[in-house]
Figure 1 (cartoon, helix red, strand yellow):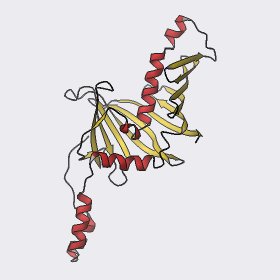
Figure 2 (figure 1 turned 180 degrees about the vertical axis):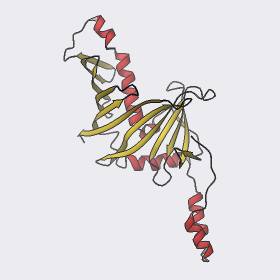
Figure 3 (figure 1 turned 30 degrees about the horizontal axis):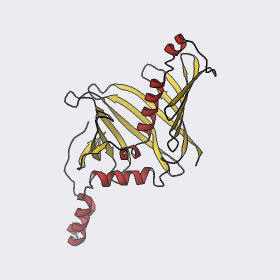
Figure 4 (figure 1 turned 90 degrees about the vertical axis):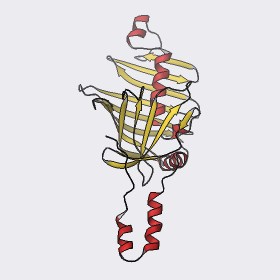
Length: 254
């Protein structure tokens, strides 16, 4: 699925060399061969996805259609307000409307519109602050890429690898985290032309090859913020399809 590769001489350089334009060809070759550092690549990617810095300051409502291989389909609405540290989620779970709201360290759940529910209902619908915090981390982290790679505790390997992902030549960076942040090893894949994020994978134990990889397809551009339109998950070991998430975002306020 992923392989290392050498730099291929672009066709336009070959034409220039054959036509005697050696100086220009060498200049073009140097440009094509110049691989940025991980920090430079990340900065370029953020400039592509979030050139105005809206992710950190805006309030965004994201509508998801989440499908699974068994034919299951779920519609989930998420509100992310990074400036105020607020996260909200609304979905159907086991036939009930479930709404969660997290702000700072405080959380609130509502079941079919009511904040009153039994212990059995709390267990059945997983209405705990721990679950809501995990959901917030999941949506904010993955849908906030590549901007979230600037967070404290993120460790970027200095070098960028020229490799292949899903049959396309890409640039890859390896990311680990301070132990207090996370223990997984991540690889992020970028289009060399515009530094757009095209996929990523993670390992719990890289030596075992476990974990998952994710393919990103298309982009939704709303007021300058570009996020993937479709995200599809597979296991690393078996290439087993785990699910597809389709994003339909709407900005609530600037």
